[in-house]
Image 1 (cartoon, rainbow, N blue to C red):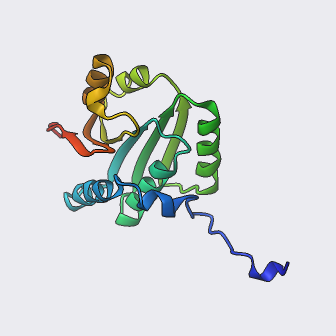
Image 2 (spheres, rainbow, N blue to C red; image 1 turned 135 degrees about the vertical axis):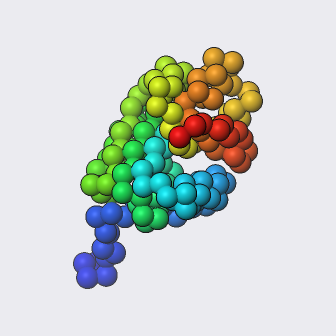
Length: 162
């Protein structure tokens, strides 16, 4: 094999980015980030509940950076240690000093309850529709963020005084 024909991967390239932009939630994520930036925001917090390998969260964080956000906090939560391991590895490959990324193995309700004091700007959900969640999980979710984007589109927005 000719090594000169191998693709060169950028240090800031996000593994799986093509998959992320084909996710049904991507248009709502782009719209939410664009609206926040248009409103003059320079910082954004994004939490991905059931983040899996973190592809969508990382792409959202890098898209926020491309829009001009200068401080991006991204937090991924999942119950699967192997998925979190893959997410951490992907985050290390796509490091950017303006993006703080953390991935953790945690119980979803407990992790979302920890977001209550400083709600995220955007919460991403995947899998089971929010309306089918256990009532405790729904309450934790609603208190954890200003905008929830799930597989069914933007399912719920909350007005939070800035």
